[in-house]
Length: 256
Image (cartoon, rainbow, N blue to C red; front, side):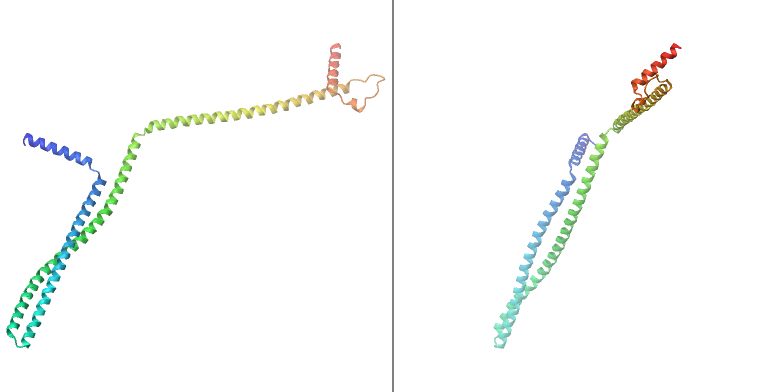
């Protein structure tokens, strides 16, 4: 293989590759339908012309056959009138029209066969075009699905799953930490409340014990002579009196 042949082959292969890459299946299918419809239009025109020619041949054949029959009747009329020469002339005209009718009949049969073939081809092409349109829509749907799948795959390929997983893990840790802080705050709040109630309960117990001790000391100390018995109101010691009594008792103990 010569150098020029090799260069030509390389150029052709590159051109074919460029054409293949530039082909849009949807546009190619649409153009194919358009071409088929144009062929259908031309075939319809050919069928219409053939049918018109067939119609003219039928009219000519019928006219020749009618003329042949008419001259035959005239020949019979001439014989009835005793004019053989006129009858012979009429038969000569009859033969001319009969021969023309026979020739037209052969062409008419051929034309009828051609028209029938064209009609069958027309019906077949119409059916193929209908099938092509249906297949085109199906292929377009499949092509769109394929493009959508390709776009989805490209998007999935661009997504960094490792980075996304790390981000979710980090966010989950932050959520868990926030939940732990909220739980600890709730526990601390409950402990503070319980401690306050415990202090109140402990304080009330000490106060009760102190009051009981003061009442005991007051009842054990002797009443001064000449003093009136305490009234009901006096029997109930006040807090100040109880403290004073407790101090007096401590002084006595210290003196002893």
